[in-house]
Image (cartoon, rainbow, N blue to C red; front, side, top):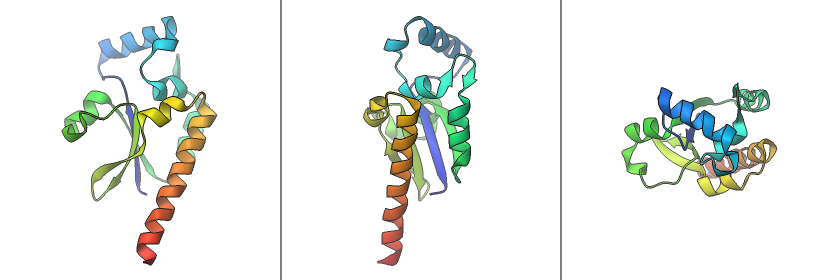
Length: 130
């Protein structure tokens, strides 16, 4: 695995960023992006999350919904947030919105992602051995 692509269930741009920021503070229980809710505080990326993703020996890309769909419109029907990797230049889903939304805290999200990375890499090794 060479790259992880984190897709937030929010659009880019100043207005959208400010709206999301206010929504997270005023009504966090109804905020639509659990990936953002778990990994970002009111003043930026949580240090525990930053340390975790920095420890992963892969490139990381963080995209908003509109940025991702601009590059990969064939994924318009996928639920977000999501985490992908690339295989042959195309995104491959690692963690779905349902899985990310099951995480109740940052530690659970980290464990889910770690488990999925290990499983994905084992499957790749099996294909090379066969």
